[in-house]
Amino acid sequence: MDSIKYKSFTIFYSIIFFLNLLFFTWLTEYRVVSKPMIMASLIGFYISSAKKQSNAFLLAMIFALFGDIFLMFNGEEFFLIGLSCFLVMQLLYTITFLKDRVNDILLMIYRSLPILFISIAVIAYLWNGLGEMRIPVAIYTAAISMMVISALIRRSNVTWYLPVVTGVLLFMVSDALIALSKFGPTFTGIEYGVMATYMLAQYLIVRGMIEKSVN
Image (cartoon, rainbow, N blue to C red; front, side, top):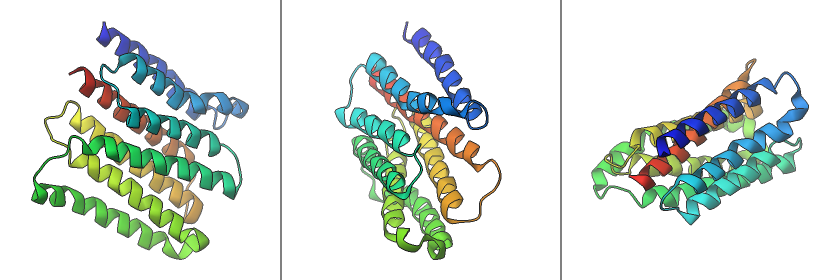
């Protein structure tokens, strides 16, 4: 029954996925409905499917929903509020992932170093163009780095370990593309890359946490 439920939701989520990409160009007014549906659908999926639910993880998804909503509006204040919502989400995801961490300090360091190097490189590359946003972006980058590292240092035998790692890495790519579009050189269609990587990231993370709870 669970596999049928997962398949049905995956089809439903795929529709949400493609509609969000479609509404960038056509019927743009419908984005006010399609974008909140990303996390709203995942929240419903988690509540209805996870056998042992995490309050921290559920709260993280709610903050992601608010973040999606605020980032739909133009203006620096809405961008900062949306950024803050995702900052809280990342901290709560980190807390959730750390419950399954390995106890090997050297392994933690080995898995963490590449992420630290990438984060520092991205900040260094964008630094001159950040202006007054240097501190907020640096804090946000530190938070997403912690989230990725906390997923990487989980025990490798945890159910759906690799899909969750893929999800947090895609989340990092999505945020890097947002930073590029706002503070650095951009390219045509970057918003499609931001949304596609973000939606796939959230699906993999949530699905991974569900798979862990039922196995």
